[in-house]
Structure formats: structure tokens, C-alpha cells
Image 1 (tube, helix red, strand yellow):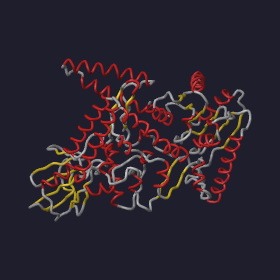
Image 2 (tube, rainbow, N blue to C red; image 1 turned 180 degrees about the horizontal axis):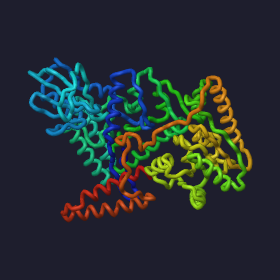
Image 3 (cartoon, helix red, strand yellow; image 1 turned 45 degrees about the vertical axis):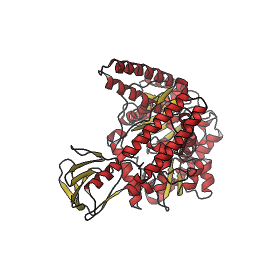
Image 4 (cartoon, rainbow, N blue to C red; image 1 turned 45 degrees about the horizontal axis):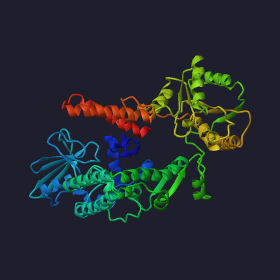
Length: 564
């Protein structure tokens, strides 16, 4: 649901530990995907830009999987030991995902990647006598198993044979780093690192893993630290095909992630929270991504220079839509009296039960226009950077559901909005020079109403800029080709029909935070300080009342760092 990496803020001497909330549904899909990539060739994977982050080694993953099939020699104790290595939890109650239950020579296992079914393994004389699919609640048998590979609970697996040598190397590196810190008279940092690493090593030796295990991943891998980290791309077959969607946004993100991660790690290392080797657990640099990626297709309505340069002449224009929809008509109107003209256009759309998108240049303009429309009886909302992340989707869903008719925004109305109900996009100050009114930005904004058969874009400007002309020419050319294709094939355009996110499987989408969001980072830090002092006072007094409530409130506050 969310992930907060560990962060140290030197200015306030505040360490924020790694925190995350795992959505069981998404985690199961993630594990089943990597397992499928290891076992099959016919796999389609949908992933975010985070796929360039370090992941467990696929060879180590294969090595630790447990094969289950009738006739295999396997003692009960050995199977239990192997399940513990996979980080499965033992229980005597109802089975949950990544758990197992032992009743004599019958062991029930709920695989981490399974959705509804568990496995029952029956042993006799240290041999698997039978393996069956069962209902994890009722125990009802659903079918026989010929062969199955039980996979780890996490993608960061630790081969047992490597633990002694790995922990020895970890302690050696720790001693070197502690000596460096002591020599620099940084005694607090040296003591901190000594305690943290020793605690981690003790847990690794005892359980096979520890919190923050990924920071020691290089010690358990045979890879040279100078080589790129293992990522999801390493799980793909050699003949794999990679699609980079919205590449004009994704490519710059890939470039930025490496430097951001290294900067955060440098601070942790400098103040004794991590060993220098933790920097090996990192995302790919852009140069590494270029070398590792398989055959790649960049997908974008407005490709950047990088994609065009790499594609050379191999650019395919994907203009024809299966629904027969056309690119919107474009009208240019004077900026004089534009607000009154816009109000009239909005009323026409509202009468047809359609929605309207309006893009402006500043937050102040968005708020003032929203006030004007409200005063004139139009239901409208605005969307800009002051609106918190988890509220944005709620606002968009409200527009689609008809709770209001007009959404006013700035750059947030460019990529990623899929609103078939919107038939008009109005672009104020379209002749303004700058990034927000570049040809790429205009094409993206115009395209927001291309999913509606009545789609139209109105550009309010007193002159036609080169960016406007390029966007208008491109849209006109596409529209002409689409019309010709529809006539030739007797296709009648139909407005797209898409479910709103609230109509999707609720288990996929996390609930919003109950804790009110802080508007600034300084406010967030102040509130955390107050809560931490309250918690410390209660813990020192020995009273346990309200401790859990305070810890939950603090956890919610820590999570807000990811939105700042």
C-alpha cells in the first residue's frame, strides 16, 4: 500500500526507520509473477518504474524453492526447516498466506503466491506419500498435485550455505568502518553502527534474515559489487520485450531515481546507520538500464528526444483507435471575455450531461475561476499541488460520478487522466510561452477529451504561437486520417466506457489515511515531536493505556513523509 524508506535528517537529528504496509492481494500477485517468470516463458508483467530497484537474485530464488511431489524423499523435520527458511510462519490455527500447520506427518502449507488454495503434504517413512490441493479453512480436498514448487515469502532470499561467510564479511566491513569513525572522533556514530550491525548479524544467523535484509544483499550474492544490481529485468527471458508506457515521463524518472537513492544512502552511511556496502542495494543507473533492458518499445503521444533518437526511423504512429474515436476538434478563441465565453460552453456541456476540464497557469487563477463558476451556479472543483495525493483520485472519481461538472487544474491535467465523460477541455492562456504551454503539453491536454465522441478543445489565445500551431497541425492530421479510416471501414465512433476506481476490487486499493495530513514538512516534524514526547512520557510512567493508539498515530505521521 505504501513504502517509506529509512531516512536520517541531520538538521533535526531524526531517524525515520523503514516502514511499509503490505497489501496482501498485491503482494501475492507480485510473488506469483516472479515465480511465473522463473517457471514459464509466456508471461505478461505490468510494473512501475520501481522495477529498476534491486530485487532478490533469481538463481538464489530457484535454489531455495521446495519441490513437492509424491515419492520425493523428505523428512518432516527437514520440510519444516526449509519452510522456516522461506520465512513461512508456523501456526496451530487457521492457515493464512505464507503459513504452515503441522499435525503429525500431515503438513498443510498455504503458499505465498497462492490465492485461495493451500497444499496438504502427507509423509510416510520420510517420503511424500501424497500432495493435494485443499481449502485452507475447511480442509476440503480440491485435487491432486503432481509437482509444485513452494516459493519464498519474500523475493530477498538467503541461501543457508552462504550465511557463515556472508556474516563474517559483514562483521569485517563493520570493524573497518567503526575504526574509521573512531579515528574521526565520531564516537556516537561508531557505537551506533556497531550495535545495529551486530544485532542484524545475530538475527541473520538465528533466522536467516533480518529487518532491512536488502542492505546486506551484496554479501549473499556472487555478483561483483561493481556490476549492476539484480532487478526485475533479470527475471525476464533473453527474448523478452519491454514496453515503456508514457515514456516522455518514465525515461526522466529512471534517470533521477539512482541519484536520489544514493544521496539518501550517503547520509545514512555518514551517520552510522548503514555500512558503505548498503549502497550496492540500489536502483539501476540510467546507463545500466540501457545496457540491461531487452528489446524495447517506447509508447507516448509526445515522445521525448531520447526516444526519438534511439528509435531513429523506427517510429510507428498509433493513430487509429478500436472504438473509432477521433482526436478532438480544436477552436481558438480570443482571451478577451474568455471567462464569460467559457461559462457559456460549460453550460452547453452540462446540459448534455458531460464533464469539462479547464487548465490554467497558476493556483490562484484556479481558485478564482472556481469561485466565479460556483457563484454562477456551476458545480466545480480545482486540482493543484496543494491537494494531497490521496485526495486527487477522490476528486477525479467525483467528477466522473457527476458530483460536480467542472475540474480546474494546472499541469496535473496532462498525463494519466482517463475521463471518458469529459467532452470539453478549455486551455486558458494557450499562447503563453513556457513548459506548461509547449506543443507536447498542449497535445497531452487536448488528448484528455479524445475518449468522448463529442470531444472538443478550446484554446483561449490572442495569437497562435509555434507550439500551438504544432499541436493543432498534429491533431488535425491525426483527425483527418481517423475520419478517412472510419469511412473506409464503416466504423461509427463510440465513447469509451471505463470503470471508476471505486468500482474496482476494493482489496487492490488501500484506504486513505485517517490521520489528517500536514500541509508542510515543518508542521509534520513538529507533530511527530509532540507525539514522540507523549509516547516517551507514557512509557517512562509504566502505564500502558493509550500506548497503542499513540504508536498508530505516530506510524500514520511517519507515512506522510512519502507525500512531502
